[in-house]
Length: 145
Image (cartoon, rainbow, N blue to C red; front, side, top):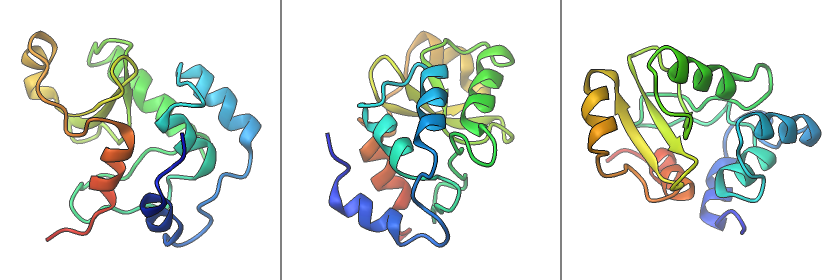
């Protein structure tokens, strides 16, 4: 599975070093999160750094996998322990605002989560924000209207 060209072009326009430098460390961090390297999210994090990506309308920066710190793992551990979310979720963004974008390891979809709606989210999972990780990136990187 290859990253769609439109996404690669948008990502590679970001300032700074966008390409992953230490693939071995990235593979370890993906394994720590139980993310398959050949999944869409795995391919993204093996190829690119998330630190310089900006979204006009998401209001959140993507967590970086391993450099300069394992933000993806730290935020995921936080939402699993503090918010008591199931282990299927990987926290893609900071959880500081009592909400985050969550990637499901089970269905590959991305959800817009708000802590105030935690119980209803867990009981009746809402429609996903994006059907898969690449669709999420397309939304995330698209210019606001």
